[in-house]
Image (cartoon, rainbow, N blue to C red; front, side, top):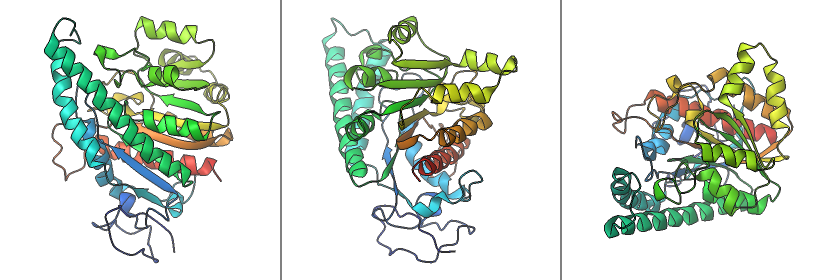
Length: 361
């Protein structure tokens, strides 16, 4: 079979014209074992190794590389969508500037986190917090420029974090290109906190930042089960701008024997045609992502997640961009072996890409 795959940006090899999707991945191949160029690929994967404001368990900054390694074990044929790899999936090299900012910001943020975010009247901590916020804003700009370039070239953008603060620039770029865009947000957390622990670009504030700073018309949330009262009040006061399917209601629907297909379709119907999918891995049952930064009991099973993605295709939406965040390979990650978290993350990323491509046919 002749197919197109991907090549990492630094790999100088020519495009392989004969590619066997059933063979083992070559050690020198790109993400998912594919081997075509960034220019040829319909999908660009943007790694953003940044998790400076992670307040419970750090390590998501290693997620993009861990997913890349684990992706070599993913079978390419997909029962739901066929051969998504034929469109080409290319992973950019991580921006060294983002990596540097993560190291700098993490050292400063750890001091603020240790103080519980209470920095008023403590000049060294106030300065540290201001510097973290400035570094976070710079990362947003770097992500925005990379995302805008991918979208303007007609690519499907797939951002891989990092913590859940990382996709702000990508959502901004997508909204500029698709002004009527809606966001489908899978998460254990509402992510509607205002500057959590003082961090303006906190992983716990991504959707609050999107709603306050960007002209997003609709946010649909799924899997939410950990949130504060202020976040709950924001949802209720949004006048329909935010539609949240709390995990409690999802679990009750299952226990009561309700038609889950109808529940899914009712919530997807609230989205406009153009959709950005933002997926925090902790939306899943934590047995599927035990090392994620802030695991929460409950959540979606693997089968339920696949059902949501399948229904997204049937709903005739068009996914213009997506992100996957908070995949943490764990403290034993050695940069070579594959953790369970990374294996799950790689498979979820492939199915999200497959879904998005299917909506764009």
